[in-house]
Length: 118
Image (cartoon, rainbow, N blue to C red; front, side):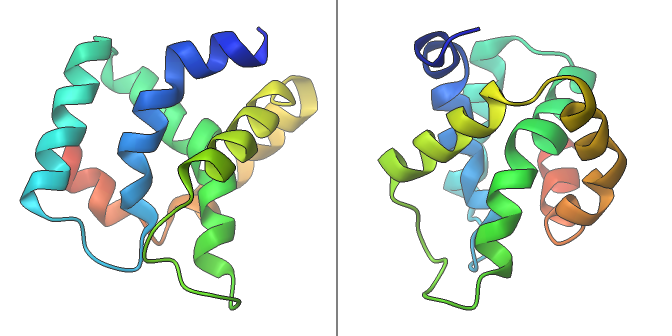
């Protein structure tokens, strides 16, 4: 899959779910927007879980762990470039490694994800 296809297929979903990793707790409007975007894509819970664990968490967890700057918001363009680059490399051993360590990259956000999935 090429970069443009990734942006076309996942870009809006990724950007809509990114607030799960922000410093502030997402509000009702944030969650409503996330649900609307999820429904628009028609993905199964299993597919969403893998998007959360493999496509988003490895990139966004780095923002949470960063001590430089704030993580109250994202530069959408920069974030999209990081997500696309990560996902273009997400094959073979990298995919397996991220699956193995996804508990670590999702632990700070898991409670929000669970609330969204209820």
